[in-house]
Length: 89
Image 1 (cartoon, rainbow, N blue to C red):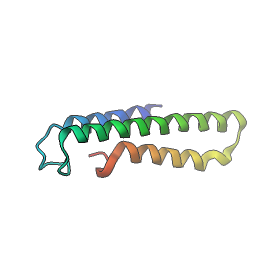
Image 2 (cartoon, rainbow, N blue to C red; image 1 turned 120 degrees about the horizontal axis):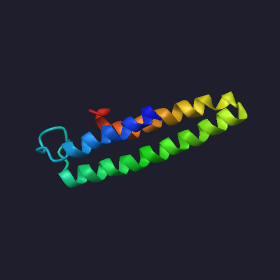
Image 3 (spheres, helix red, strand yellow; image 1 turned 90 degrees about the vertical axis):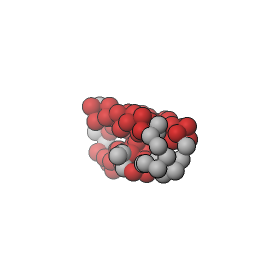
């Protein structure tokens, strides 16, 4: 859970950076477009975190260790959505 609490922090910094001049780290996007993109990615990361938690609970309650690969994939998916095109810079 502690790890998943950091993903919104990454997105928060990207949201705040959206107000910087267009020449810097926004890829030429308008600030409102960047904010909208960050919010969309926050939703996707949150959904992925929820799926992660659900699958992890199923794995632990049923001792179904075959779900570990699914959990790993969901963890990577969450990081992908939270990091965005710059990997979370």
